[in-house]
Image (cartoon, rainbow, N blue to C red; front, side, top):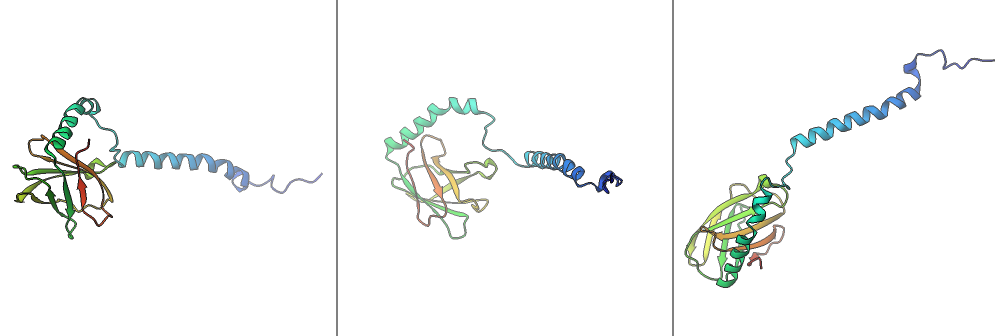
Length: 167
């Protein structure tokens, strides 16, 4: 009876041993990678005050109704520099305006700016950071938060964004 030549070799020279070791090592490396990504990335989808925000829904509906009653609508235009914002309303309002640009999934990219009146129906403002993401939720309101206009903005569109009441 002949002996197998692999029988006398040390354990680390057997291919099957390395195949058995490979799977747990890959699982550990994958687990470390997932832990690193969980710690380093921000999950902006879940609000800390979701209950409070849920209770405020009635005031949001009231603001939309007020904008509809006033007959407000407008157009938002982004300047060529990517930071200047111009808004033209269909009716004159007496206050400056507040523009909120909210990213659908990354709350850290949200921006709020005050738009100043340049003419009876024309407002301008400047963003802190250029908009690098292609999709935004836009909310325009007066400084007293009596009414609001909303829209979803896809920046790739070259046209002006139409702002209307959310109702």
